[in-house]
Amino acid sequence: MTTEVLEQQTEKDLSLRVSNLNVYYGESHILRNVDMNIEKGKMVCLIGRNGVGKTTLLKTIMGLLSPRRGNIYYKDSLLNPQSTDKRVRMGIGYVPQGREIIPRLTVEENLLLGFEALPKGRNGKENIPEEIFELFPVLKSMLSRRGGDLSGGQQQQLSIARALVGKPQLLLLDEPTEGIQPSIILEIEAAVKQIIRETGISVLLVEQHLHFVRQADKYYAMQKGGIVASGDTANLSSEIIQQFLAV
Ligand SMILES: Nc1ncnc2c1ncn2[C@@H]1O[C@H](COP(=O)(O)OP(=O)(O)OP(=O)(O)O)[C@@H](O)[C@H]1O
Ligand SMILES: [Mg+2]
Image (spheres, protein in one colour):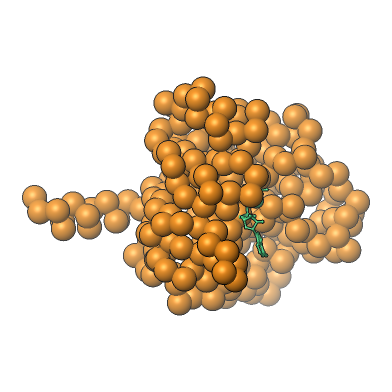
């Protein structure tokens, strides 16, 4: 079998492929030669200390920042020329760091915004799928509350739920447990695992919470904008944990 055939086969199993990505803020070189593969149906975790470039990578995947060099492929297509909106409609869901729900809108209105991610937007009067409330029951009892009145953990659940309304095939989660109480962390973890199990989507998780990191299939460790270690989370050593997680 030629290498080319092998490559094609691997390509088919990939949800996302990032190749030699270099991103700058002005003249500051932030991401350096980043390579990353995310297989379909897998959860990949990106770890690294504060300020190393994790959010910058997610923003670049979403098209909120443009790489100076390097390519991003989603399934078979090159994403670089696509707008952020297009990437969302192609099936990439994004839950940004700090949640970014709309505080003045109700929980229901926030969730309805998720329909914008569907290729045709919201046709008529679609309802929020019941599965969303099975994952996050607390949201159902709070539909008419304003987003800003929810606790941090509930806002995070709302932010994830809003992304799921758009039926993503790849979900990017940027530190979903930051500043959240432990019981809600476990609920979010369980929900993410359930989503992967039931829908087969792929997840790229940026996370500091070790228990959650361990739920991922693979990890990538970032330092000064470069990937310096990667592998199966089953083999995550205490050295790696100490070096790259703020535990
Ligand atoms: N808008 C910006 N303009 C200039 N520099 C920025 C900007 N945003 C981030 N940076 C810098 O880019 C680097 C990477 O930031 P980034 O937010 O990607 O890190 P991070 O790994 O997500 O950190 P954290 O764990 O704190 O969320 C940091 O040095 C940061 O100061
Ligand atoms: Mg960040």
